[in-house]
Length: 251
Figure 1 (cartoon, rainbow, N blue to C red):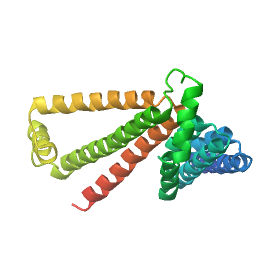
Figure 2 (tube, rainbow, N blue to C red):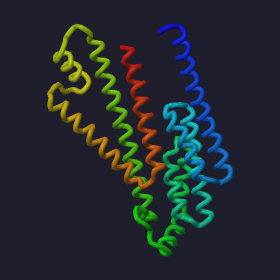
Figure 3 (cartoon, rainbow, N blue to C red):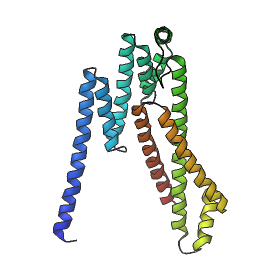
């Protein structure tokens, strides 16, 4: 690669990075303006867009925090309008905020007598539509799904740490043992198993976990919440990989 090509490539990288940064800043600003005007849906979409473009960027954490705050505000406003099912839905979504204060306020709203009484009254006025049970049943269903999704984040992170540790083991062992012996040594060290059945069992479990994960996202019946957890999964795996690589570098 000649000097001109290297300069052009560097310019292109800086240009793309700059555009990406401008886009994230624009989305954050857009979300803040929409939220200040009480336009909850455009604000939520703008904040979600930040993490779609850069799920591991610091701006994503800021957007996730603002997303939780906006969902809480939307819940509080819906409660004031006596739209209790809507208030409950936004409050449940706010439970996944990275900010403890937002999660605490959302939990307090969900357990408040005013919301519970309003939900009972709204259930008497109308039948819930498909996929929307309303009331305590809907809250319990979503809470259970959120808990299950959080558990899968730990599962995916743990699997990534082991994968990186296995690769590090292969690199660290170097030219001493080779071929199948090397692979078996690392399998025994990391996975505590050298059999082919063990490998197949792990593969089947990974496929099953992924299938169940997708089922949880589908059962949310909420695209925004599903997107939030897709971003959480990406971050969990990225963070686990970084931790495992640092640990391997110290060996």
